Image 1 (cartoon, rainbow, N blue to C red):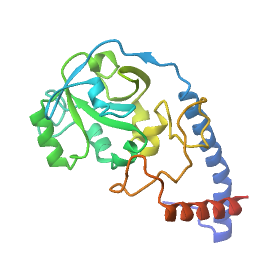
Image 2 (tube, helix red, strand yellow; image 1 turned 180 degrees about the vertical axis):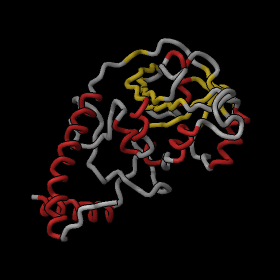
Image 3 (tube, rainbow, N blue to C red; image 1 turned 90 degrees about the vertical axis):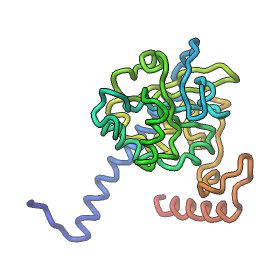
Image 4 (tube, rainbow, N blue to C red; image 1 turned 60 degrees about the vertical axis):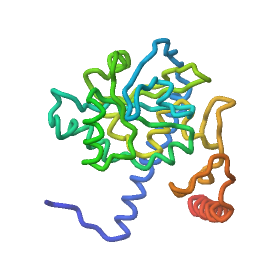
Length: 245
């Protein structure tokens, strides 16, 4: 391999040029997410039923009391490569990247995986692969076909107003590659990251960035931010802004 090797000063100059382009990309991504939050909603008029580890579940049940829901269609069923020992290789790679869901829950958002495999097989797969933290249900009707994931993977985002459910976004193909972190999940939801810096419609829930973060085992709904963390994050943000001008 033939690489251009330069001095630290030259490398820093090259990096600064790339940083300009990366910041442009970040701003464009933020602008796209702002448009996404203004997408029209599709009312879900049909009732859907899933099998869960403890019995039948409706689509509303999958919200688990939260306002938003993301459902990923994972291919684990007869006829899929790897069955019955494994799920689809691509879907499995995605499942390996799903981080602790407590952070999503703190933004009033649930994540659920859905497949056509029976619950006994899903339980066995989750135990083998270390995916016990991912809620995973069995599709028992036309949910996958109705939401564009009967033949290919994809994430559908939903929101509820009381018991009324609306589809707010859909992402698949290479868009699924970015999923796994709390930020990318929230960016495809109707409410976004729910932070004050975001360009969101009036009335959307928003709070100060950083302040809602917590250790995944320390979230308490409605609790005030840890004052020590507030001081640390404020100081860090001030130093960063001073440095970047």
